[in-house]
Image 1: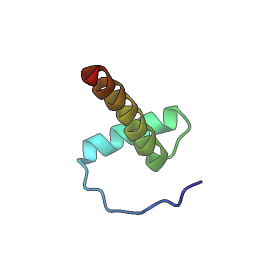
Image 2: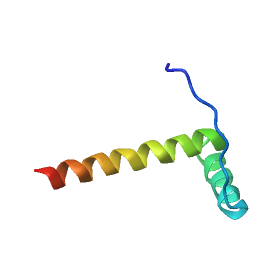
Image 3: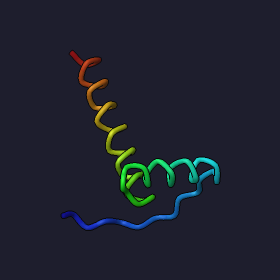
Length: 54
């Protein structure tokens, strides 16, 4: 596994609470849920960019 880099994230408390609850529903930590959501968003973006360039 690649080394992970820590950083500070400023986030709206209501959004954080929703992410915490969503992560708990899917048996992920809050950090794990944020990473998962970012990875999924990047996959979608890469597909969208690939479609635009063809």
